[in-house]
Structures are given as C-alpha cells and as structure tokens.
Length: 95
Image (cartoon, rainbow, N blue to C red; front, side, top):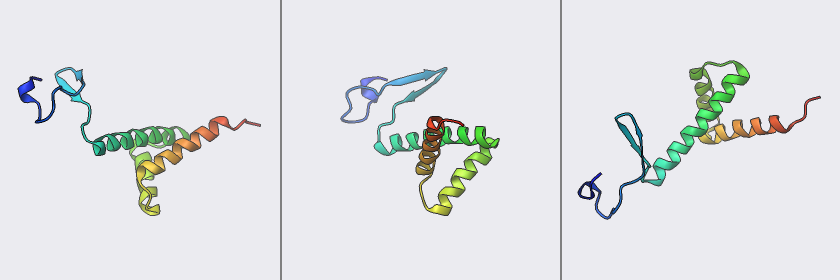
C-alpha cells in the first residue's frame, strides 16, 4: 500500500496477512474487532456442541442461535457459557 492510498490521517498501513492473492488487514473499528471475536467464540462453541452431541455444523449453530433468540441473550454470551461448561467439565474429576 502506498502512502497516497492511505485514508486521511493515517501514516502507515495496517498489518496485513497474505493468503495467496488475497490480503487480509487488521480491523480498524472496535465494532469490527468485537464482531470477529464473537464469531470466533461461536465457532469454538459450535465445535464443542458437535463433539458432545454429535451435531452437524449447521445444527450446532442453530442451537446457539435458537437459545440466543429464546433467552434474548447475545449469541456470543451463549457461546461463552458453552465454553465455560467445557472448562468446568475438564476440571471435574470423574468417579
């Protein structure tokens, strides 16, 4: 990225990661960062639901989504609860 292509007020380009011919840059806006973090939480929670209950990926996502809608709690918060459950399960000694 050339200095002339940068937005006003910006002196350096954001860090970039190249994937073939596609370049992914770091998000500039806090909302973008929050959205990416939420997406990552949901992905991890989906993986756990898939492993625990033998769900397909769309079904695991739908379970998180449905729980979110029914409880009026954001999906990221539901995902955090699933991840916390995994942590508790890991720490609980089996008998």
